[in-house]
Image (tube, rainbow, N blue to C red; front, top):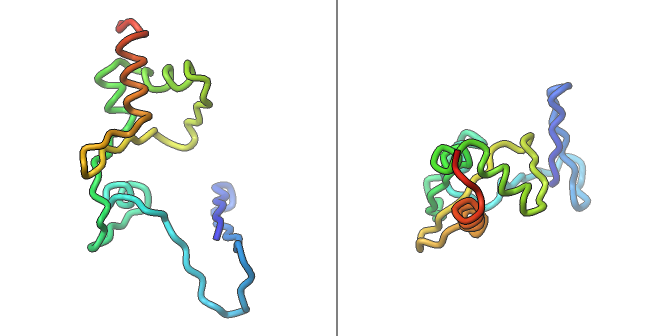
Length: 116
């Protein structure tokens, strides 16, 4: 199903992507995320979650590179900045793989912007 939250009315509309019979049970997925992400965004964690990642939010990156660095980099790369979606979150996977967006932000900030 597809969800759409309406904060003004306090309702959540769920739209089905396929036909369902009246009275049948619906399931909603939150996607494949680490427990840190699930806990932060939805308030729960799964005991058998195999996704072991470290999440770094943009506020932490900004605290190191300078306030607004993530936003400035996103805009410089011609991508839209949508603060209503919340903080950008970067992940480091269980094998040590670093989120490509984080690497891009670090590269651009360390080579293009003057700290100040």
